[in-house]
Image 1 (spheres, rainbow over the protein chains, first blue to last red):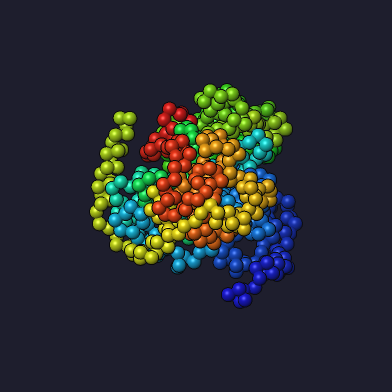
Image 2 (cartoon, each protein chain N blue to C red):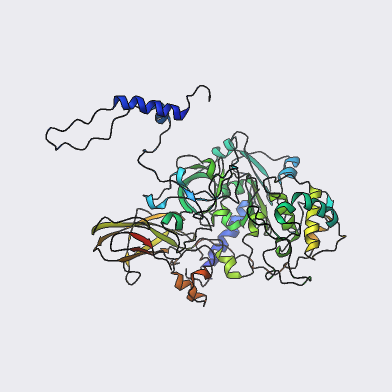
Length: 417
Length: 190
C-alpha cells in the first residue's frame, strides 16, 4: 500500500506548487469596498478529501508535561506525558489529536490489531468470558461525555499559560459497553468487592477500583469523538472510570479481574498512603475549573467588551454552578453554563465582561451536584490547619482556584502565589 | 448516613440480579490454559503465584546482572539519566518505621505479593516480562533479605511468599467506600 501511495509530504509540496500556479489572483477591487478575498484558492487534495486536516493557520499543539520535561517521543521513541492546549479550546470536546496523553512511565505505544485483540473478564465471576472487538460491538452501547484528568495536573506559580498549568485534562465523547453489562454477563459472585484492570503497555500496569464503581458508570470504550479510540488514547479498547484520577482509565485494556480484596498491584502502589485523608483524596477528582480565555500568555488588545470563558468539571458528578470574579475574589458573579452540564464532563462557562483598562484578577469557582466547592489554596491550608504555603501542596489532585492577572497593558499573567 | 441506606439496598438487589444467567450470550469461555497464562494479578493471598522458587543468594546474582545498572550495586538507587529508586532502607534493624524509611518498595509494601507483582510486571525497564518465575522469586527474596524482612536462607515459592509478614502489613490507610454522589472525603467541603 505504501508503495502505491506517493509520499505524503512530496504530494503536498507538489500540490501546493500546482495550486500556487492556479491561485486566483486577488484582483484590485475597483471601488476598494469588496469583501476580503481568501489568501488564495487551492485545488482539492485527494488525501485531505479522504481524511481531513485543520487549516495551516491553526497551529496549537501538545507540549511536554511537566513544562520543560522530556520531549515526546524521545530519542528511543518513548512517549511521556503531553498536555493539551486548553488556551485555544472552544466548546467542551478536546479534539482527539490534542487530547492529553499520560503514560505509566515513558513507554512505547502498543500497536494492536483489533482483529486479534481480546478482553478477558474473570476472577470472582460465575462465567469467565473472552470478548473479541466484534463481540463487544454487538452488545448494548452507551455514548457519554467524560473528562480524564491526570493526577499530575498541578498548577504552579512558574507556569506561564493554562496549557502548562491545566493541560493534563481533556474531555471526549466516549462510546462503548458499560462495564456493568459485561460483569452482569459474567455473573459477579457473592463476596466480590474489587476490580483489577490491566492494559497492554510495556508495563502491564494494573489499577484496582471498587466494584460499586464498576457497576455504576464505567465504560469499556472502543469509540472516541465519533471514531475509533486513537492509539495514543488506548486503541482499540480503553476503560473509562469517570471522575477517578487519570491512571485508573486503563488504556489498551485486555483484562478485568473481579476480586474479594484490594490487590495492591503495580499502579496501586503509587496510591499507598499512611494517611486516611490522602488516601481518600487520591481517587475521585474534586470540583475544579479554569478560565481559558483570557488566560496566561494572552493579551487583550484594548479596553472594552470581552467574553470570559472557561472549563469546569468534577469527579463527583455534574457541574451545578460556576462563579467568576474579576476582582481577585472580592465579589463573584454566576456564569452562564453552556447547555446541559454532563456528569464528570468538561462544562463550558461564560460571562460577559467589559474591561476598563485597569489591572484585574480573574478567577473561576466550580460547585458540583454533590455540593463540593472548588477551594482556594488558602482554604485548603486552613481546613488542614497548616500554614498557607504553596509548597505544602494540596492532598490528592490539586483543584484549587486559578487566578489570572490582566495587567494595564492587557497582557495576562499567572497570579498564583 | 440516612441518604446512603437506599443506595446500599439498591446494591444488594443488584447483587441478587447478578446471580442470574447471561442475558446476551456473547463472548466465549477462556480455556484453563488461557486463564493461567494471562492471569498475572497476584493478590495478597498469593493464589495466582506460579510454580517456581528462589533464594536471596540466587537473587543477588540476578540482581548484579539485571538490576544493579540502574538501581546501583548497593541498591542505593541511580542518578540521571538512569534514575531508579533506592531499594534498601538506610537504618539497620527490623523495626524501622516503613513510612520514615523513605519510599523503599520492598520495605514499605504491605504484602510481599506486591513486590513479586511489581517486579514481574514492570522490571527490568523496557525488558519487562523477560524474567522467569524462579528469577522473580529469587529477586524478591534478595530484596526482602537486604531489608531485614526475611532470613537469608528462606526459600520463596507460592507457599512461603504470601506468609511473609511485611513491617507495613497494617500500617496503611484503607480506601474509602465509594458511593455514587458521595463527596471525596466525608467532612471535606472541597
